[in-house]
Amino acid sequence: MRKIKILTTYFIAAFALMLFFSCHSDEDELVVFAAASLTDVLTEVKEKYEFQNTTKVRYNFGGSQSLAVELSKGSPGHIFISAGKPPVEFLYNEMGPQISGVTSIGTNSLVIVTKTQTVDLVDHSSLADLDLIALADPNLAPAGVYSREFLVNTGLWSSLEDRFILAADVRAALNYVKSGNVDAAIVYMTDGLTEPGLLIWDIIPRDSYSPISYPAAVIGGGNRHRGANIFVEFLVSPEIADIFHTYGFR
Image (cartoon, rainbow, N blue to C red; front, side):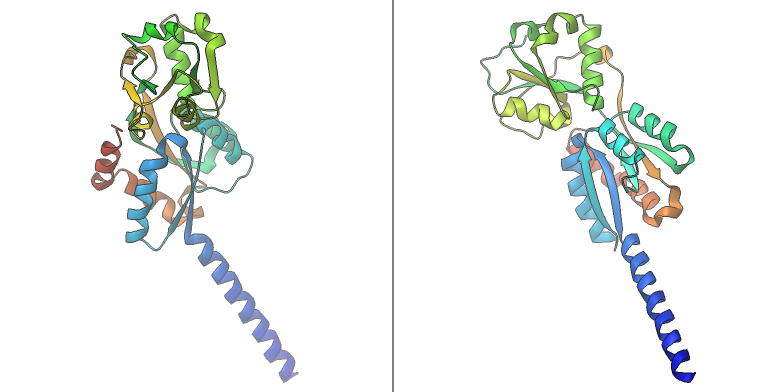
């Protein structure tokens, strides 16, 4: 009987220890689903955060709407940072009270980028002189929604619709023009700044599309991951705001 008790005690202790390390390991990693346009700035933020904290950060970048759908179907994530409010609203409608702590961490603007100066864009109406134009798919990424708003509100959408190459997200649209597969792309200012070899044409009227904001939402509340709220607070700290500004966010 004494041997059985010892073995039972051993297995209980071993199970408790395994459970502890399992929970501890989960709490030591923060999974962040974030808009593709945040790739560069959040990569730098990750280095600073992990230098100051024991929690590791793992990103899943992509089109905001696609990421919201993934999360709504059960993909594990602690924070969702969207390029626009609609994907967060979609996620809230799907997951309700599991979404909390929505905080805006920055704003952006739309620009047109081209590969060479052989393309001369006097204003946004000069897009009519081009053959192929890349933009994010409005069904997959907010960048596409803003781009479509601009094109519809300026009367260009219907006349240019057959010239559009739709990309999975804004970074893919940027790569289309970078590779020379299209004449121009409509992207965020911050994405244009990541490619010194491309020309940025800041000629899209700001009042032709909705304000571009980046809301960050905690998934499952603070109880699911103790570091989620801390990370969001870190994103809006003055130190990190300065980093966002260097990448073109406002």
